[in-house]
Length: 251
Image 1 (cartoon, helix red, strand yellow):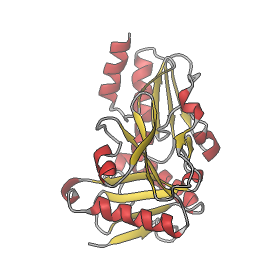
Image 2 (spheres, helix red, strand yellow; image 1 turned 45 degrees about the vertical axis):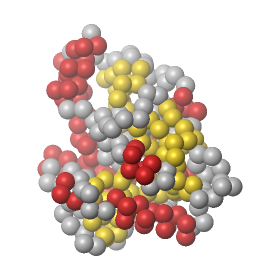
Image 3 (spheres, helix red, strand yellow; image 1 turned 180 degrees about the vertical axis):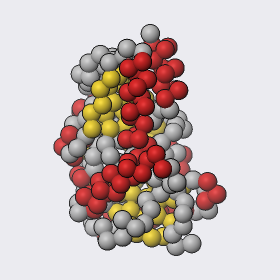
Image 4 (tube, helix red, strand yellow; image 1 turned 135 degrees about the vertical axis):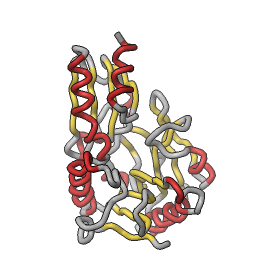
């Protein structure tokens, strides 16, 4: 199968892999398409398998990434996702090769991506990136790691920004930072808010609407980061049931 590049010209009629077939996320998918279109003006590239499947890569210059990151002249991978029957067919490598070719054509020094110390939902498999030559150059509590593929030895050393290594002032109760980048994050917020209200737990959700806000965020994973009483708990987009159990345990 071939890969299709999603552009501003075709994004309205093409699917973007996220939340395929889930009608409850239709507005969130439209929001992400708008977010992507705006980022494409800043150099974002999105390739997906030319099929109705969740097989895609999304990347942009690291200076433009909505992440607290210091990686000048690097390409940042927002997401590389290969799921279902398409796993183990070489798609991850082929999509990564497209990113590498674009980064080299632009004279960049390498590629950066966020992984985790162990396999976790919504984060890439660290072992694959290490197999492809990436090295871990920085980490942020509790489990985030910065994977770097560098081909210019004179390039700067990528790292997470200082904001993610200092204690955030998020206040009492639940505080969530998120962007429009993931339809699942946007789609679940009101359900989580209802659960918190039932249990009398303060609930605040901060939508990061600019790159500057995202780059100064208190968490590496700006797509969705959940804090409880000022402590980072998870980047995982929880179901209402799992969220309820978290609040019950925290009492």
